[in-house]
Length: 312
Image 1: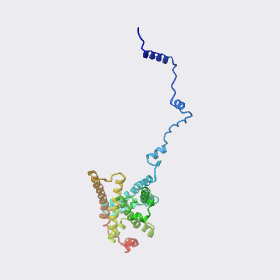
Image 2: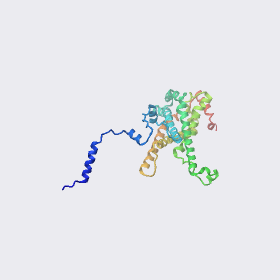
Image 3: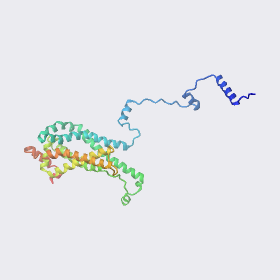
Image 4: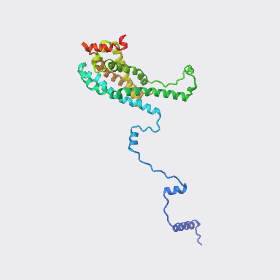
């Protein structure tokens, strides 16, 4: 007598019952979700980004979720790019062209030809005044913001000012070389602008008569102040530009390994090389141009006599 396997019989019954069930289409995702979650809100379809938002995001201008540090950092950084346009023209006119022509009179026409473009309104304000002011103020605002953050983080705001000095509490962020050189460079740039732009504008109504001959006359007439101011301006300025660019791009040497040493020597080599190239035309040609004679020289003397340090 053959005994039927109960598992096989159950499988047959299940198969028959499945064959007798009338097939029905499965509900889609929305129907199944609605059956599980009654009155579920309808999921909105994602809209493609607009051209304006795509364009602003590609430039980093969308600004969604960014703090004040994010904006201040970019203001400080991108203002240097704008000022770099003016600096390129200025260095070319006052150093590179004299180095090529080997003569101050032969270089004057190139300066007079291009200077009206970046010394006219509104280009001078957009390329010189506004970028420099933005760069300095953004840097100061960042330092104050980090100082306030340190006070808030370490509870220094509840400590009296006298106690902070007694305990030598370091609430201010450390000053890097690029920051220190920037603080020294600011009055040097202001003094340069005062002598070559502000002073002629006050006493002559403009700086149309101020060119490379005016600079040469100053080196011959007041060599100590002229050479000291020029070397300081160029040396500190180039160092600030080189190390500032390294900071923005993450090239600052960290540690004491071979890679850090190589970066240190590369940055200082770039600093010395750019400074030497700039001074080759400025000190090698313009500074040796000599005194201007006649009424032109007398006009230069009258302007230089208005400088407080020269009076001494």
